[in-house]
Image 1 (cartoon, helix red, strand yellow):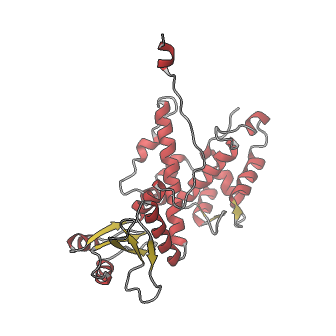
Image 2 (cartoon, helix red, strand yellow):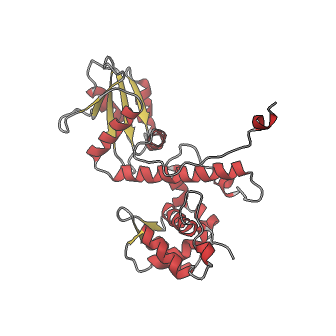
Image 3 (cartoon, one colour):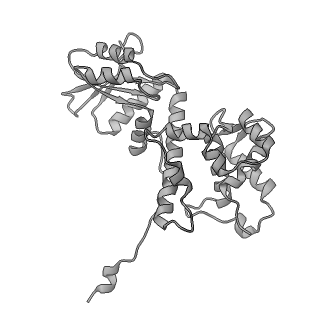
Length: 298
């Protein structure tokens, strides 16, 4: 007897959610454990991960995350999970495999939303416990966890108040080592959301524009307006969006006499992840090896 894998909790999760009422993520995992896995021996039910979390509950929570990635469930508000029509169709069918989920268009779009490159799902799926090296397994696991964090981060950025999104951008640039920043007035700012100092003394200024879009792309007109709003005391600007830029917008930025840096949603969450903005370190793992020098002393 062994603990169920995370994907084996897909249907149990949807069963618990089938009432249609939003359920707290942690409560959901506990309900799944108690209803479907309470027959397991105590030593398995109490098994811990290396970080001290309950292994079974952790796997169920990962199952919930994957269902959300493929839009078989949604997060109606913070910390809550709810089944949707797509999830109900899977529940009626009575099964869903990892392969079916990873080939789902919504899942693929979800993965690609935080990666400018095509995600090699085959490489991820083919990491086999028996054939992979320990380092392969570590790399695969960290890659999956990082992608999930970045995707959740991007979803939250798309939901927050637009004015607060502008402040998040300035906080990020500050964390990246730029000088003090000034938020512009929320009315009549001419398309400029903030002004940051490129250096600590404020000798060079950079103007910022932040567009919190869900699906709409930033267009050439937006870049043109941004350039037009920049005053004569700077020739540098950063245009940041949670979505992406269309080809005309990219061309306009490249052809401008000003130096305009474009940051799309994927690049934005990369930077926030790198500089720990909007995220926190959950666990630190130590990987140790034998110190051969210790055994080769005189």
